[in-house]
Length: 190
Image: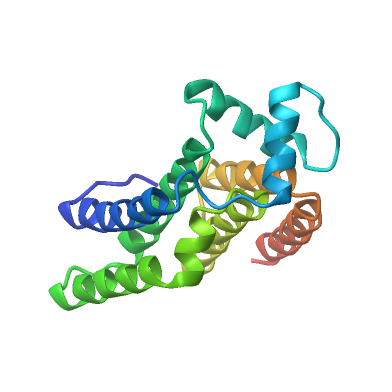
């Protein structure tokens, strides 16, 4: 699946990045709970437990090596959401101005919605998990619209993100297995 980046995509991306980064700036270094501090403490002390899945802790550890502040984790979550949302808008956009305006309004609504901007800057494994789950739901939309005729590269990419989903949260394994089972059955049937 080849993607050609258009100015409309850049606009959607910039709207989400700028608005959510503004909220990250206001609530700098992000919204942290006991779980967030626990995970950051594991990283700082190199004393890891299985309270949080190691894969997510490892992602945070790599980010903190780049910039030693929790703000980078919030920034990463914002970046992941903005890329996924732009990709979804790109795929679902017909080439009409009305459709673009609708996507811009929806992007503004999503980014200014207190639930969304609060979670985008909250340092929990659940946030990245939810974004990857959104991406997988989008992949399922593509598979259904293409009537289960997908390239092997696309199927491998879906499998890769299912593997990532299963590593970010412990219950992600169950979701990945169910999705793989259902998709395998449907691909076989079609």
